[in-house]
Length: 169
Image (cartoon, rainbow, N blue to C red; front, side):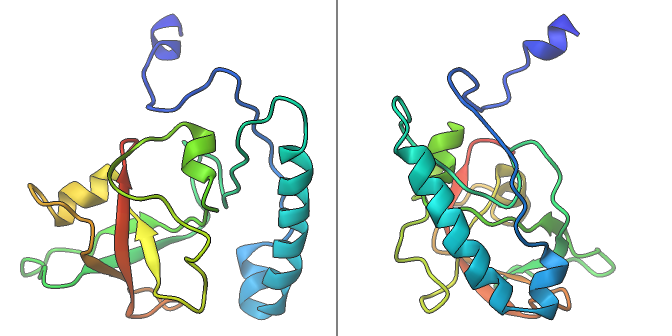
């Protein structure tokens, strides 16, 4: 246990507070897309209230905390990267995060940029991929600017442009 506690996860753990507040589930979003807007307003209120507390430096909001499994894993394709015959499509967890998520979690990006406030539903779709997916599809390449697509039933063939790759796999 002592050795496990000393494993470097790539996350800052000092002076970090995490909490979970599930206002809407992925299943609810599928059946009622308007629920996302209601939840977003409440998450924004919570973020602003927490950010106003003395000593708070940054507040990140994400669909799940670092090192926890996501409820949603989809098949992923990369543009211009065909699979070998019979090779199964890789699967990746789908998570959402606000622009301050990586800063607040202490996750440095190896390449590219974090999300910005202009990365919204009405703009080009962007994604930050982990090092495992970057190594799988873009070995010895900078993945920033490349395009990947989730190919599951929910986001069938919806392309996202890679904007960053964090150091934590």
